[in-house]
Amino acid sequence: MLHLCAKDKKEKISIFRNLFKGREDVFAKYWVSRKTGKRGYSPVCKNEWIPHICRKPCEKCGNKEYVPLDDFWIEKHLRGDIIIGIYPIQLDDRVNFLAFDFDKGNWFEDSINLLKFCQNIDLAAYLERSKSGNGAHLWIFFSQSISAAKIREFGFILLEKAGITDISGDKSGFDRIFPNQDFLKEGGLGNLIALPLQYHARQKGNTLFLDPANTYIPYINQWNFLSTIRKISEINIDLFLKSPSADIPLPISEKRFLRITISNYISIPIKDTDETFYQFLRKNLIIHNPIFYDKKAKGFSTWDTPKMIYCLNSKGGNYVIPRGFLKNLEKKSL
Image 1: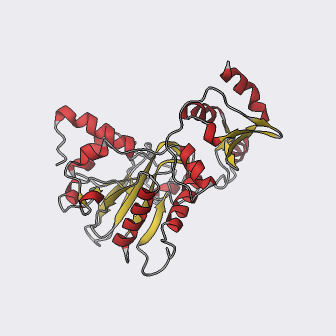
Image 2: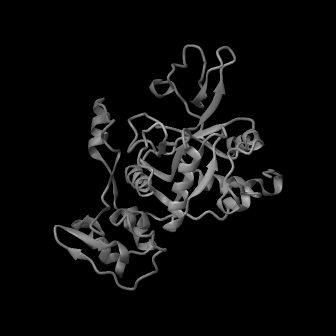
Image 3: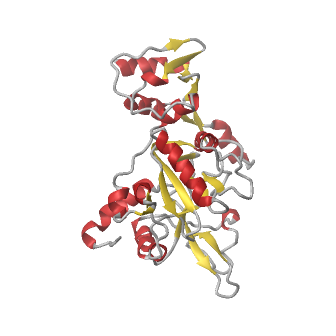
């Protein structure tokens, strides 16, 4: 059961939002037209349908004022008042999870095959039956936000290694990956994914996570299950991309010394980088892109120009960073 009594409501909502984390400045709500029966999702906007102000579509409207996603709206979703969809790609073109959507053909068989492959390489992945009951989402969660482009590369390699290669064929159960883009266009939102555990759907056994150890029936206590979900670090993603045939490694322990190579740039072995040091690099090797702001000030399109520049890259089993960062490394070692 998914009761939201006052005593533990805050804790449950916190668990939920910590996992299903996309953009929080905007979210979408599911709707059904009473006149036509048409259905879909639209961003929640304070100015929607206000005469002379609302200009559909929302992404091109100069008067849009999106409603932020907060605990109030999450509770309404869990209680069944609304159905929420979130936009996975954040404004810095990073994501906190990877999700595979299976909703046609052999959706159940293909989703199970991908789950089993992930289990074989010790990659924490979790299967949810979708809202319709005739599809599934396979979720992988990250301990920090990661470039959407990198995660899409990672996701398609997983599909290939799991033997789900005919992803465009009629028999394939695979539909798409979330995130569905490498980066957001200026003012864009990207594709949305519906949140799980919606009250009315779960009464039918849908939007619930399935237990592979119990013939893929829903976990009896979904909240206990959600509290045990493991998240994957970007270090482990990088190591997998370097050698996709290898297992996902266990978290890296702390090292007293770190060997670096200095040439035209600085190389740091990924295998020797612990999580604390990696977070130091990630935090300090991101800068605002002056070209983006110059284009925006002049009224030019910025759809293919990133807002931020990430100076932490990976190549040949190493993190590669600019030589000019050497003094920061020296200070860090003191």
